[in-house]
Image (cartoon, rainbow, N blue to C red):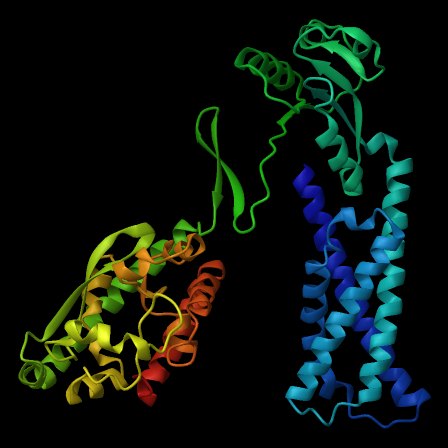
Length: 471
């Protein structure tokens, strides 16, 4: 019920914002076209601009917290957030127009829209605050009556929560404690008695009660008694659990057995269905890639063997998901003494950090350079994908030496399977020189993963391979 109300408020306010922005743009167009006697193009010519305005403003309003009822507690806080949103969204819109060189867009139209939208959004937000305040004051019959269960003082977190979220419409009837309280606390008007008194018909059990909320840890007997009392009367029973706010990731709760729940904090995708589809795509893609690998082997295998003086395939220990070790395979593109020459080349490292990458590496053979240009040397890694050690799209698989030099925050890039391609391979390979930027790109992929993102990366990778700009 609590989440449903907050979700309803968020959706309703988002729709109101979209309508307000459309109305503001219509008004700005009318004012500029008629009041200022500027003959603008037909309104349909500006629909693309309106299509950009709505997501820009909705994103800004969401980031600022204006879709949470806590934002409507004070007029000052509400207005300050709205000013920040208007300034940020306005700058994004103007920057977009400048970068796209949209000279046909009247700057006067944009300026009038910014004024109108700010005035309209301000009026709308103030009305929402007025409505929520009025609802809190006069909807007494609709307000949820709650009895809290816990020790004296434990209700602070719950009381703070309902005071900040006007959409909850909740009144605390009183509090019951697991055991008898002594001293002045026992005379508190909010204290209704003990759990035993409440369950036996005393201690305020005759009052209107919609919910019973445990705000502190209770023993199993007390929990069983309270839950039984609530279920026999159709009353909702809840437990308040406080957890630390993580810098990244989200908390989720799920039932793993009858009456047994698990609370999880995850920073990696937790969508089993989509992950299963990702694995299926990996297997199909790996089979096709192995066929392509065989064709390349037939064309270049003998040349690689002659130039390197060693086997065609090169294997190396790499670190995969959460520290799993696996053997990565590539076509051998360097001379046999490549590993022994590494120390003398480290001063020319293209990267800052534990990664080693060198443009025009003298250890690379002529045929190897040709394969690297189109990333064909990585085709044997399709075998790693088929084995489940890698994915078509993921983070870059590091060597054991690299991982040994990691700081704590670097390890998060190992929380998903490494991939043949990824954001760093597309955006950073040959351009990004700081390892921290590599970590940032890998973590960006993890935080925003979706099947659609994988599809876009694969499409861009194919284009990159066709251009032949690898090294």
